[in-house]
Image (cartoon, rainbow, N blue to C red; front, side, top):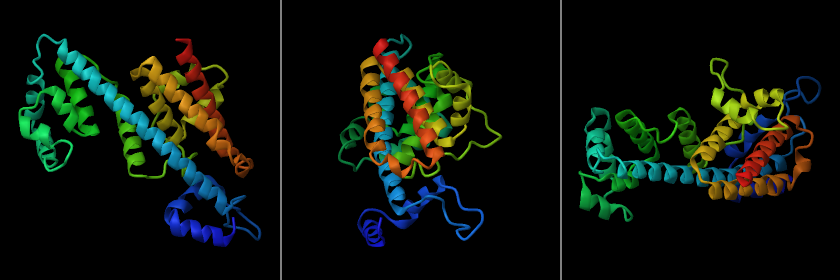
Length: 288
């Protein structure tokens, strides 16, 4: 890419601080005339990574919206069939907890909004659960699902993984970089969750070395966790459509300029791992 083209791109499409963050996917020369400079890195590669990141964020947001909807459906289904619930009691008890009183204030702050004001005016502060889940944030929905599990012993979703989902959702929604540090490793003090490892272990053509190595990358671990939760929450048709979408992204837009990255073995390795995972998930969805 010429300097003039780079200048135009930074003037009208992106900004330097964000674009420059993707250089972390490249190594620096440790000696010689180019000491301190990045190896095999052109401005066009940074532009391409930022574009791919944008498309990936859209996919992540859509997946998280699917998950959020599925959690609401599960909660309402169980409340409906719970003989000890009328749909109001569980919300009243949840809000009555000292740590949750602020949720009412957050709901009230949206009273002037166009899309929720009618529900808030009609029910505040005594919300039935089918209204309550429409008004609370994703994070508060997770707290509510956890509370419901403690109260009635019914697991709506495995909360072990929901912090990862929430962080990914927030990062994508706020247009934060997702793949600017693709091979940054998880802190040595943390361990890979055994369920996530088992999820990948059962997939053919993924070696133990590849599984262990890739799951120790923060980005890969987080995205695979999203796939794992999606695979466990969503129905067959939803999974087929979503995995097909990701497959088309990986086999289409991602490799449009694959020659940019052929010398970067780390990026290529991360791509191949995710491609195998998605292929396996898609095959399983159709087999079922």
